[in-house]
Image: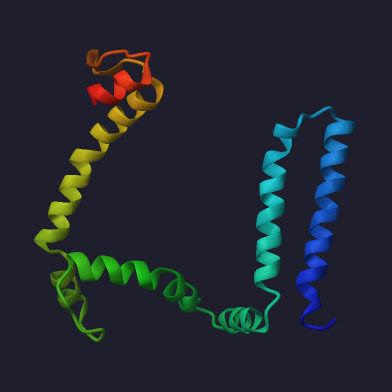
Length: 160
């Protein structure tokens, strides 16, 4: 099979399997369209993964990654950008060849401690108010009404 045809073949097979499966599920089993949503999500993810592997570069990267027994290349590729963003924002600079105690000293700064405390204090309030804005049901904390019930959405927006 030529390299360029893999993606087209996977797309055609995925569409065919999706149509047949949906038809069987709805006609024979009596399942409504909403019941097939999980299967369609799985089918789309399968199709995206198959199409992502249709390129020579992707297959070469995957083959090279699977040859290594430590799989550190996968972690490095997926997590490095996010880890480096957090490190640059909250931690002190440290060389890549630093020892473990030096890395701990650089990582555990007051900036990251302050951020962790702020997050720990803010997320319960944000979740409580956010749920109230969406539903309008009175919200209680330990039996005490924190925000009253408000049926009309603009009233909730004004009160918050």
